[in-house]
Length: 311
Image 1 (tube, helix red, strand yellow):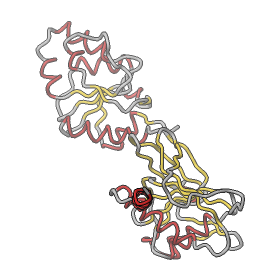
Image 2 (cartoon, helix red, strand yellow):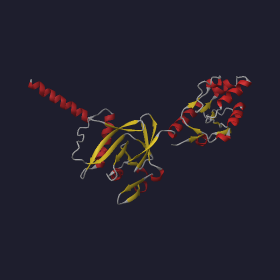
Image 3 (cartoon, helix red, strand yellow):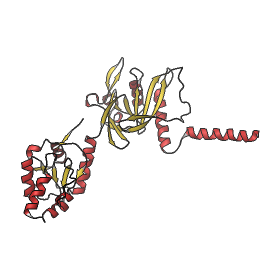
Image 4 (cartoon, one colour):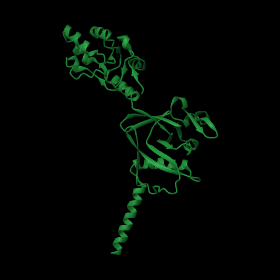
């Protein structure tokens, strides 16, 4: 699992380290950010100590109104063994009481000139991306007409060859063989290739090829949201495949369910064209156009009319 430290945040946002340097390696476990306004007023009963603590003008202006012994007490309680980092925004001067408490408890205190709300938004996005749940799937991820299609199936079924043909037809490769997937938000899965095999494609009998070198930068993407899963399997004459498209199969990855299609593979089937049509049809369904349902409704109308005519 990817971990984020206070030092990572400092380097990412070019923050100034004020005190508590010994705790610069503290880990940030959650993406939530706390603005300890109630804590400045003395209420620490439900203090979320494991979050990044962000102090803005509001909190510090109230802090300045406190008595000297109250100021020391509040900052000592703010800096705990679980507190990953305290950040002061707007370039406001860091209170001396916070400096002393942070050095005693080894809690890093940093400063930024950014506005509190702006910095909070940027930091939340950064932490959510870094701390998102992740997994890895054996397959190929391709951007087809703007739809992120995860192609799965057993080894040797033709996933990479299909991806190569799609690239030749103007679509973009994201990852081959291994797709790293992270859930950045509810129902949002982002896929990318491991650094080791980024932009590379393996074709049996040909070996490893570099897609970006062969086809240019427009043929690859670094990451893509996954919307559709297509499983390729060898045609089984004894199996009944969906011919209308009324049934929608689902595949769960992490906490998100994705639409899944099973495409049988046999000589003579143009998989690249089928996947292109599947992607376009997926987009149409999301726009409210469902050819299978329209056909089913027409068929029901015909059956109904014929039944009425009989009576």
